[in-house]
Image (tube, rainbow, N blue to C red; front, side, top):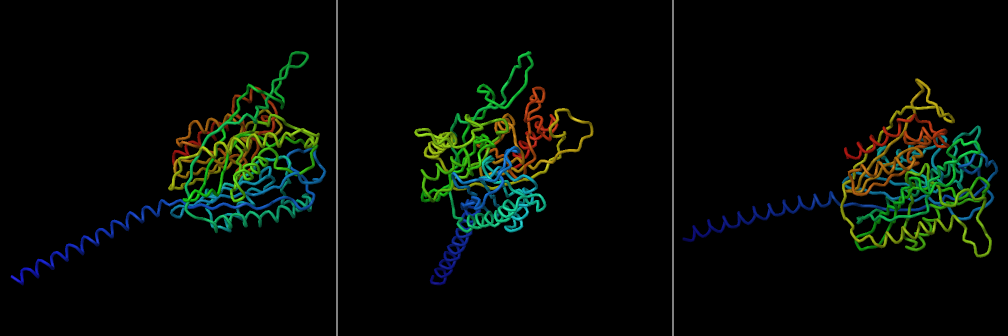
Length: 437
């Protein structure tokens, strides 16, 4: 009897041990899968305001150096990581990375942080009141050469700081709308009845009013970033202005950070705005008349307030989010700049397209100045709930306009290096890449 009891007891212990091992294994698998889905993020900001007078970007007619600073310029960074996949979003208070500087800066950053080309979105807010970047040692101004060289270190510093600050986060997106952007392709009729498209105001033309806002917060609710995307040229100030400023988008960033707190980073990303100007455009300076609110400040504040309203209404946030990215350089049908006609056998124009997703939030980076109809079409066709279209990103190829506008002509068409069919090819390729993610 005693022998049977011992045998029975051994069997019970064996079953218990096997059950414990199985339970531990199942728990480990669940925990492993959960850890794979933990989204981590970090954010950082560094000052990139010129310390010396510099040549300013955006207007060929402006040849003199800057004469002062109205508001500081910054580089803002958000980095994400999940299960070994990374995504680095960089917003700079610059016109963009022209004159061969896009690939120059991208290579430095990709090499420094061992990133894949698809994991970096390097963009500018397209302010026309900032410094011009140059790596041309023969023709570039000495102060701009020095500024550009120093900028490399500043961007590396910001990205490294963001990586060092990474922790688990929850993210969510909200949508708002702002009227500060205005279609600029105005129809003019001459005294003899001839029509043409000029840069002006076209209040009834296509305009993407959507303001996309992404909230990035720690599990305890502490906010680290409030990124936003809006389609507008930062051109309140004209070529007569010689004072450094982030213009409407830069001032919106500063307003959001002031309201939400000094620990919050608020990077702006420029949506498809090749034909979208601020309502007040081309002013010679900040108006200091008593009682007057300078137009860049007024419009920047209006946009910033909408960002804050949307941000504060974001309640649904997610703790996970798979990261996937893709990068492609398209060879598109080209045409000569400053001409409308397309020449047979003209060389193609390359264009970088970068796409990424974090869960159901998508990002499309286009390396040129995209007209708003194209951005709206990409968002409409995107398979994701929210899609940030980011222009002046990973390149600066020039204006990309929809085919139907080539009949009308105008500034954007003349300056474009792309043939009419290029826009449709870009939109389809971007949406295809989104689906493939």
